[in-house]
Length: 119
Image 1 (cartoon, rainbow, N blue to C red):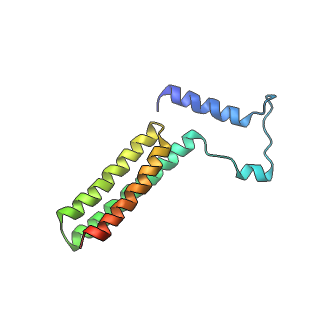
Image 2: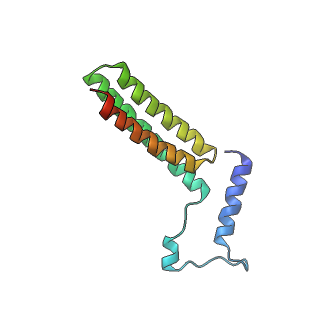
Image 3: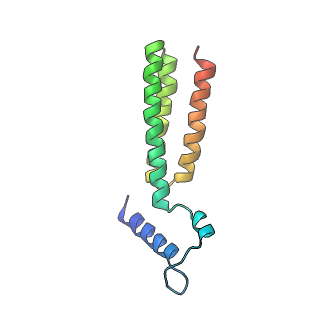
């Protein structure tokens, strides 16, 4: 993450924690539950989810290759691994929403391809 991204994240966090008059905001019980993730937290969450997805895909790939070796199995799960890597890079560059959609749609497509294409 570049220094300018870190500065922007810090400024946004400070702005969220300050009321218009400059005093720290007191968040009542109901409003505390509605707080959104900061951009840094959202990026870290997507990176962790993509890493977990990558590890799970690698385990499933190893199990599928052990049961039946096929180029199609390697292709489908290899593309899913590449997709997880792309999502990690998108998240690191601040494209968390795009990364989330790609991760969800891509993993569903990989599972669907496994179910439909691979005997």
